Image 1 (cartoon, helix red, strand yellow):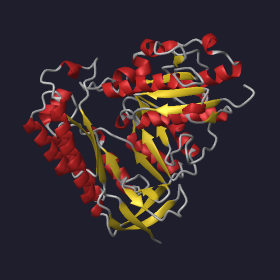
Image 2 (cartoon, rainbow, N blue to C red):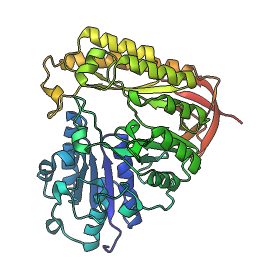
Image 3 (cartoon, rainbow, N blue to C red):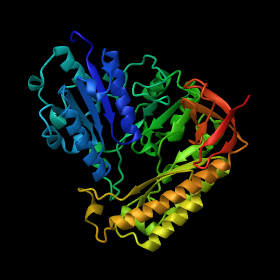
Image 4 (tube, rainbow, N blue to C red):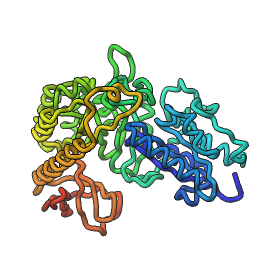
Amino acid sequence: MTARAPRAALANLGCRVNRVELDAIATKLEAAGFLLCGESDADYIVINTCAVTGEAEAKTRKAIRHAASRPQAPLVVATGCVASLFADELSALAPNVHVVANKREVADYVIRLAESSESLAEAGSPGADGIPSACDASSARDGSAACGSSSDARHPVTPTGRTRPGVQVQDGCDNRCTYCIIWKARGRARSFDPAGIEEEVRAARGAHEVVLTGINLGDYRWGSAEDPLRLPGLLSRLLERTGVERLRLSSIEPPDVTNDLARLMAASNGRVAPFLHICLQSGCDETLRRMARVYRTPLFRENVQRARSLMPDLALGTDLIVGFPGETDAQFEESLAFCEEMHFAKMHIFRYSRRPGTPAAEFPDQVSPQVMAERSLRAHELAARLRLEEASRLVGKRDLVVVQYPGRAVSGGLFDVAVDPAVPLDTLLPVRFTDVREDGTLIGEKSA
């Protein structure tokens, strides 16, 4: 290593899976003696890129240019989805930009550069194929011990500063939604060894809540094709074999909200958070058809109703795209009406972003930016009203909340909760909800 500890900054663009993958990189760099710092002090800047929309890709390129132009001329390592799709273009942005598309190789790449004290000119860039890796790509589990990840205990606060660490259980997607390019960047769906997942959950001991993530989480399957271990079975195994106090699922597709999953969650007595983020994208069946989504609203409705019959206090989140090509005023109204019927507690609303390389980018009847802005505003207004209504239903009830920031916690249903600022961070706090603010934040009073 150099005379002083090498310094690394990490920047994330995109989804929760990206954040979890960046945490793994940060953990490995810390273990190798790196100091994590801000970009202005860094020798190495790792940028985990996102290609989910054209806007996200533009932000990626801007972030890389900005990092590369820092006065200290740091080595900038670009990884992630844009790096997988457009390695040569990113490498050409600046001489000190290197591309390591395979995220499992990023930490080792940076560590080797620091150990050898190579200059930027000497180092070269591995390009889209990455660098020779000590871990075999055919190993059973991305990030398993064979690939160099540690089973040592981790602090409940991740290296990138979160109190609820994530564990990735799946990657890739076999769906081909017409607006999406992620399947090209991530590849086919593949699931990770449950033994490795179990090890990672145990390694997060001290954290009261662990979030299971994946690009298509509900598609988790491990073992024989005839009788694979699916997501409910994985949850059951983790509940039985680890002491984690609460597991939370990240986003899931509507067909994967099965009876087995709902029953498992209901029977867990709160150890699986009573929250499902079910990706809707549109509440209009004709729009769903053009999107090539693998469900229609009747299935969504049926699966939600079944889950709520088992978990009356289940909170629902969703993603909604407004202004998809060909979406008429009537279809938008139909989509909004379905959202209101579902009573979502949390809605992520996106204006359709024309993504080169996707079928939808070539569809006729592209919606104007002005119309998309109007629809986005109305969708946000509905989302705020529904969130307040769903939060108000909880007043008088009790829950366990995880304190994430001074005076602020998150409930099982992923509501923001105002608590006593004196309560230490990362406390699992039993509270009774006494009131709700206009923005949907619940007021939590410590209970026995």
